[in-house]
Length: 89
Image: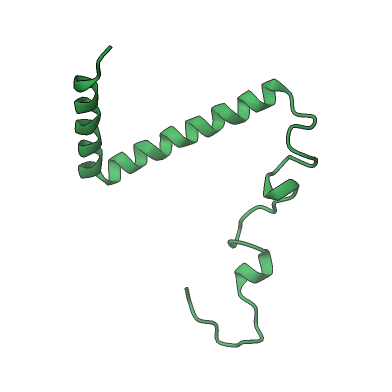
């Protein structure tokens, strides 16, 4: 983290409430779009869309991790193959 020149001058993170250029987050517990208690006014379709988006992002993050850490990905594949070979139906 870069040092500040003056103790009186706030950093960009303190001014903007997060990372510079990050969108403002409003709602309950920092979740955008939620204004009430969890589960209130949320339809099944909205929940499924959020879940699908989360699962897509999770798969993308796993693919990225596998690309940048090929040794770990190979070890995970080998462990999975061993588990499948030793699994009894």
